[in-house]
Length: 237
Ligand code: PXP
Image (cartoon, rainbow, N blue to C red; front, side):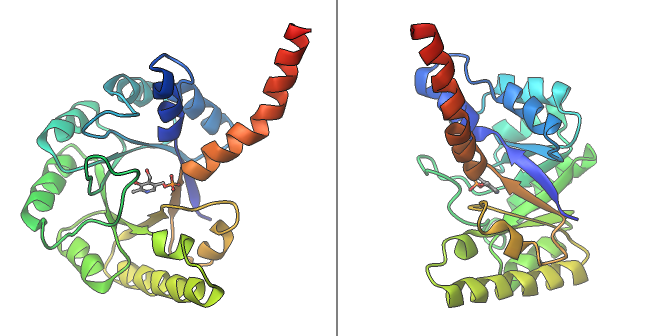
């Protein structure tokens, strides 16, 4: 049975829309755990546009399940990771100004940097995962780098415009899952997963954990909106 790691970045995005304290991603993380989530994921970006250092520090103390920190392999964020020691670090590429992570790591092109970063994290017994596109070279390079896990980028599957393209992408993910297993890599998956596309993906039995953010926050806003307006109507009347 796969695990669900809830990404609370967009709770912080909403907080930052007003630059205040609410909604607090820490509260969202606690609620997610109470609802049965197996882990919490945050992405500490170089520009700190949603998750802040304060969130990382508090979440390290309050998350009882499994804290996964997504980060670019930069010295500044690495320093934070080594200080806080999350349960897992997922290395991702980061382009300043991007709306969301745009693709998997170019593992070969950044081999030495990724290798050094993995080494430093593993010294602190932090599990390392590499966010990669589902292709043979990326999976093989990740194994060569002795990463503990890979997270397969599911964007091509989740954005497929036709049923046949969707099946093709699913098949590719399945093949890469088998290769990852053969090479001794743990397997996570994520990006763009939602209430419609999750179940087909989880037919791939090697997937241990999925990381989901946007769809959950989008659903929460709408599901919670009715009650929130009702409460205010009471007060206004
Ligand atoms: N995995 C990685 C590596 C990501 O960067 C993100 C987005 O922060 C996710 C998973 C979650 O994607 P989504 O918000 O589309 O569920």
